[in-house]
Image (cartoon, rainbow, N blue to C red):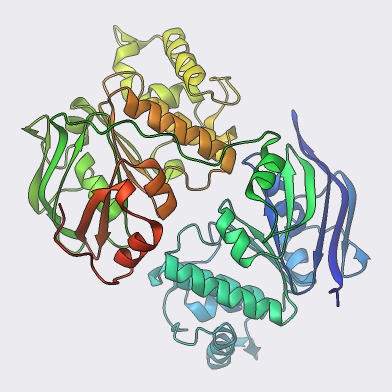
Length: 506
């Protein structure tokens, strides 16, 4: 028997100065289903979420919630009506306890005083309902791991009797085991009749947790109510991009036997990783696989000079690199695209051209003055090479999609002199179409002789992009092998503390 439709959108329009973000969007969500929302960055997903959550009011169209036409004046009004939004960047207050976060705005009171015992009891009841009674209700939220914070955010929605939860990239910071646990919680919620709108760039997640799919493209509804488990991947990609994309990785070149460009010898940092040794050759892509917390990102940052090693050393062309010195690393030819590009790599309010030239500003300075015209010309050449969209290098970088922002970060290191590129989660938050372009770009860099060392939480990405794979677990490098000698099951077995392959790392 088909579940009732709890949410229906028809012809929803939302415009901002110079752009129509939503252009007649339609959507239908049933009680007890996981309805997946797909689309490239810039397709209108974020605007649609904000319309549903009450952060934006639509200019036209109809929103029917539980049989009544609505127009929410604020997020509070949407939440009161039973629609809760759990954003990728959770809106929890780190300094407050779990119980306080769950009760914000509806604290139990008597004679004007907060009944803290009742508040903690209510919090424990909600966490037990979500299958996580082990989360301490008195702990500060800021001290919790990412997975627990996700559960607390869901608990806050439940405590307000939400009938629809909107989840925006909920697995972006979760490890493999934590993702499966989140899916279990989602299944429990839908079994109780709660509807979920699930937004993710990871098609394998859509297959596993989704029931139906709606696709947005350029602010319009490209497809509605597709079957999440049976619709072919190429069809989903075509609906998202308007073109057919071979969802495959670039072809590898024949292995190089040059001298190592990068050599890492016995590198260690207490509490993060220990005794790590490996090499990267010119034109080689080396991928690092491992769970969150295995030391992957910390290792990358130590190679780059952003962290000081306790033991070991890093050599470029056989010459030791000065530790904990990013400037020395850049002068030696290293460049890095960090995991948190918005916080760590981009000046979001600055123009695209300034973000591209940031690491090479001295090149454009004469007598203490910056030659802005030369900056823009150089940045435009990079934008053309990377097929940046749009090509206008004078617009603020914050107006670009996630994939194009990542191109800007990588483009910064293409102005000359970069010989080794470090990439931490290069496609996080990037849609399928932009991923394919980034994969091609990484392979072109390697073909030109640049060494690439990358970290990714997605095992297929590590295997598909890399010439050679390093596997880390609990801060130790436990296996190295050519990518063609590994498969996904083997790598997962290694990173999840399964049976170790025979022999030591080679």
